[in-house]
Amino acid sequence: MKILNFGSCNVDYVYSLDHITMPGETQNSNSLKLFPGGKGLNQAIAIARAGSNVHFAGCLGDGGEMLKDILSESGVDLSLVKTVTEKNGHAIISVSKDGENSIILYPGSNAMVTKDYVDEVLENFEKDDIILLQNEISNVDYIIEKAYKKGMCIIFNPSPFNDEIKKVDFSHISFLVLNEVEAKAVSSSDGVDEGIAYLQCTYPSLKIMLTLGSKGSVFIDGETKIYQDIFPVKAVDTTGAGDTFTGYFVSGISKGDDVSTVLKRSSVASGISVSRNGAATSIPCIAEVDKIIQNNK
Ligand code: RIB
Image (cartoon, rainbow, N blue to C red; front, side, top):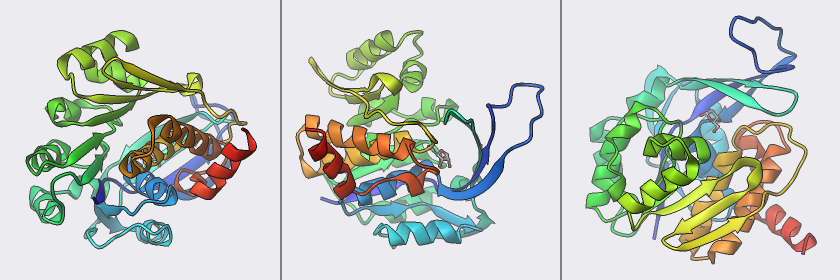
């Protein structure tokens, strides 16, 4: 069984600030650093560092050389990546001294994913292969439709939430990985519990991996709910923490590990990433994660 991550890659311009800038306010930044990022790239690297083989598909644009380098150094298969002349996608990220962030995205190359390219990529996969998607590239709804017709197992992280997600047929999805804000948005609900209840009622076979910020995470499959606490750390930069969690989750599920083990590893990996700067650069390898789990037994 193969894993395909069809997603975005960004150059992250990370500005370190005292606090997140308020509307109408101007403030100086303390530093500017460039990091590889993008939800697709981050999650592909997390899957690879969690010990699984993963194919990455997506459009790399002008200025995206460092993105290709980190993907390849991390062991991600890049044979399906398309190079385009468009400027590479980027993100402008503010990080406060408490580790909170706010992000502006410029899609660039990530918006160049065409239906023809999707068809070409999916020819390399078959029934029961896993496909992981986020919402930072064009034609996500088309990819889901085609992957479903092939019988692939679709894992969807509806992030960032925007109107494009309304085109997605959620009945085609096997696993939904999302946070509380996204749970309310995809279900058009005011509350998280209400949103999850709506999703379960509307899509009874959907498995839901809900992250709850500082309250941990919960995996929901029908009547079964498995909770996991966070791995507490001093927050340096929360960027990419959700991507680290998702990548570890996908790797664990693909290996057939029991859900409690998958959640434990995902939570520790995501905690470690919060204690470091950057998104992709902060993702730990599985040996480091397992050592911490052993030491905390
Ligand atoms: O999830 C974090 C990522 O979101 C960043 O790396 C940034 O590129 C944006 O896509």
